[in-house]
Image 1: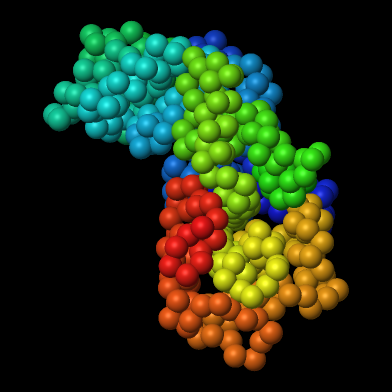
Image 2: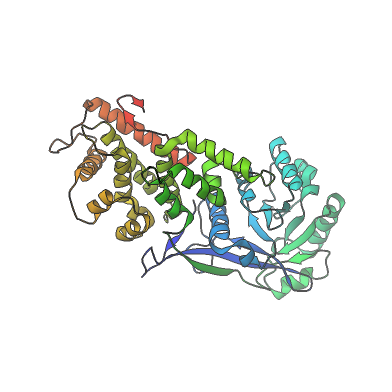
Amino acid sequence: MFCLAPCRGKGVADGMNAYIGRQAIYNRDYVPAAYELLYRSGREENAASFANPDAATRTVLANAVQVFGVDKLTGGKPAYVNFTQELLMSNLMYMIPPGRIIVELPGNLKVDEALSYKLHEMKTLGYQLSLGDYTEVRGQLHLNSVIHLFDYIRLNVRTRNRLELRELIRKIRRRSQAEIIMERVETEADFDKVKDLDFSLWQGYFFEKPERLCKEVNLASSPYGLLFRASAQRENALSDPLRSCQDLILRQPVLTHLLLGSSPTPNLTEEQVASSIHHKLLRIGASGLKKWACLVLLKQLNVSNSDAEAVQAYLRGIFTEGLIGVGETRADPDLGLYVGLFSLLEQVTDIPLEELLEALKPGIEVENIFMNREMNEYAEYLLYAAYYERTRSPLRQTKVRLSIADWDLDSLFQFCQEEAERAYETMTPSDGTYRGNVLH
């Protein structure tokens, strides 16, 4: 999940707030040599609070790349970013070129053939690696087999005495040329304990507490706001949504990662990346692109600690779309998708619906419903969808006429439920709408 917090007192067109934490890592001359980038949300003063470490890292990288700018955050110095072993395999780090990021992994790595290959690949591409709190214990033979690949190794000052730290340094020196970072130097006693040991860098409250940074973001001109508006365009002689979105995705590493499910390695040419994006967009088609843009929006703007409301909003969207697809109507199923989505988007984002409509422009038919301007055909389908979600029974007093039996309606709803959960998790929507027992 990439998360931005709404900026209270302002409209979305004016801005939302993105947050990130930053803490310097100092050399022995007390000069910042690098910065660690940390997850921060709008709910804490200056602390990390998250249920999912992978989601936290995605938010850190997304905000660093597309909101703050990595070089501006670090003054051109390297940025340490924490990765889990699982997240490493997704190539998320390739969103940032080598030389500007140091990939930090936990000290309890479980090294297998796949991880070993990934570490060697990263070194070949020019990336630097840092190993979290290292402890030599039995069962770490596999870790010791790749320790020479790490450029930095951290040691926690507060969990060991001076003799233990000295012995660990000696053992590291036998296997690696990595620079050693003394972390958690919080007090003068910590400083005195390690100041004469053999290491290169140190970090902790004794030097500097983490800094919480905030920057205003304009939703309408953000990558995911632009993506939504471009995908929502109706194709004509002057407009090609697929081409517009392809160009936009190519310029935005976060969008590229979300679309392809992996960031391209830096040794690929722009033409190769553009070709991958092009073929993926052709596979999901124009209807799938609209759904994918909705999924990106939900991922980016979800301010809750749960995905349940975001999945429910996507379900409402594709179920309303599906109802129109099997309805006796000339209404556009794509607009049904937006009607359903926007009926719950305010709950997911904590942003007033009027401001979302102004920033994202889903279409005049959609805006008219929510601005109390008219009770049009799309509103009838939305009421039907919401009623069926609550009761799992057809709505009888309605103008909506469906071309399927009640048992097929239940099949449609079950399909949409499964599709919403799958698509939100994989970020790979299906193209088309459900009609009868097949997806068209």
